[in-house]
Image 1 (cartoon, rainbow, N blue to C red):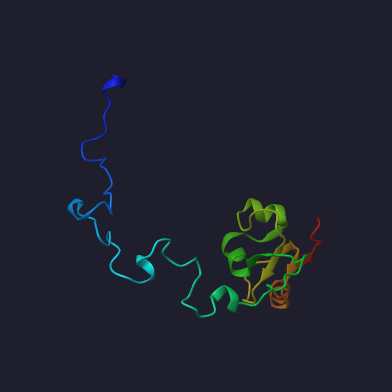
Image 2 (cartoon, one colour):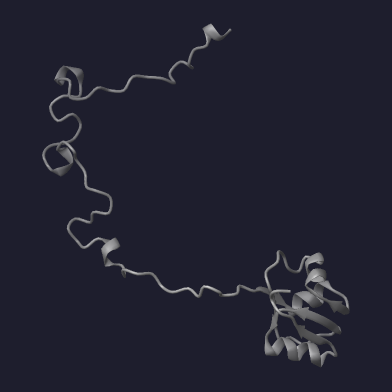
Amino acid sequence: MLHTLRPTPGSRFRRTRVARGNSAGGGTTAGRGTKGQQSRTGKGKRFGFEGGQTPLIRRQPKLGGFSRPRRVEHQILPLARIEAVLSSGTYGPAELLAAKLVRGKSPIKLLGNAPLQKKFGLTVHAASKGAKAAVTKAGGTVTITRISE
């Protein structure tokens, strides 16, 4: 019944009331030690205070760096992974997504320069010179599409 509910014995206890006299067990200095900044009322230092040394927040440069507003973040697609997972054929972003070699809608960049054994026709958004050379040497093609597509 609801009216019989009680906290588990020992789970709730009263806090020690300090500075209520020596007979109460927390008198005189009330557990703060003797003298010094930490023993005073309103004790402690503000957040970030470093004992008078110039604080870290003021030692840092005032302004942050610069990030390009239209920077394009590519997904990396290694040639070795393509050869390990796919068989010879033609693949575009949709097929690579279906094969779980890439995820999401980010542009795809083909990287790597290891020699290929299979012939691929790849359509990606960007590719390194080494990756293009490796695919064409194996008899395949690399087609670069625009990112908006």
